[in-house]
Length: 373
Ligand SMILES: *Cc1c(COP(=O)(O)O)cnc(C)c1O
Image: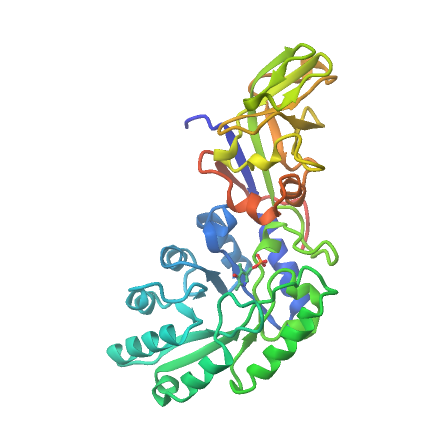
C-alpha cells in the first residue's frame, strides 16, 4: 500500500454506540442517521453498514449519487434524499426505492407524474418551512398541493419534516416558534410520522422528538451545542506525518508572506497537512484569538506562519528533540483537540473540519471500542 501523508482514524464502534445512545435518548421516537457528504467525510462505505448493523433503519443523504451508493450499502433500510428531485433523478429514485424529500410544488408534481408513469404510488416525504427559509414548502405551497387531488392518490406520504435554525442555542426563542409552527402546519397530515430535530434539536427535549430524529454530526462524536452536550464520544482522529524538523534563528520568518517572525531561537516541525487536506487557511497563526494547534510528542503546540496547500509549520521549541522524529505523526484532531476546537481555531465549525478532510488522507477504520453501550 502506498504510504499516506495523513490518516483519518474512524472508530466505527464508537459511531455505532453513539447511534445507540441517541436512539435510547429519544425512544420511542426512531433515530435515523444522516450520512450525506460521504458520511461527513468519514466514508459512507464503512459508516453506513456499521450503522445498519447497529440497528439503524432510516438514512438521510442529499444527492442522487449519494442515494445510489447508500442503496447498495444499506440493504433494505429506508433512504431519504434531502435535496429532493435533482433534474432527471425521479426515475432513478423510484427504481432505487429512495424517498425524495420534496420541498417545492414543482418537485411534488414531478414525483406525482413519475408515480403516474409507473402506474403505482410512490413513497414521499415533505419538507415544510417553519422559519429557516432554506428549503421547505410554504403554507401557500401546501394549499396548492392540497388542491391537487391526484397528489394524494399518487403519493404515499411517509414523513413530514422541518429543520431548526437555532437549535444549537437552547435560549433562542426561534426554537419554540418553529416548534409551534411545525405542530400547527403538520395537523393537516394526520397520522403521517413527523420529524423536526437534528443533533442539536434532539437535545432540546422530548417535545422536539416527534416520531423520528435526524442526527448526523453527533453520530460522529460532534457536539453541536455547547449548552447541551450530546451523550456521545469522539469517533474521529486526524493525524499527518512530520516531514522535517529544523531550527530558525531570531528574526527569521516562517512561511508564505513572512507573517510569522521568530522572537527567539525556534524549532519548527513541518507537517504534511495543508489546506488541500482540509486544514483551513484561517488556522494560520495570527488570526486574532484563533490559530490552530497540533499535538506532537504529546504536547499541544501552535501552528506558526501560514497554512499552505500541503504543509503546516508548528513551533516545537522546548520539546525533547529525541521525541520528535521525521515520519512520526502529528495529531490534528484527537489527543485533546476536539473537532470543535479545530473549527473554532479557524473561525469555523467542527462540521466543516470533518466534511473537508481531503482525499489524500487515508481513512482507517477500527471496530474495537473501549466503551460499553
Ligand atoms: C444535515 C441535516 C441534518 C443533520 O444535521 P446534524 O446537525 O449534523 O445532526 C438533519 N436534517 C437536515 C434537513 C439536514 O440538512
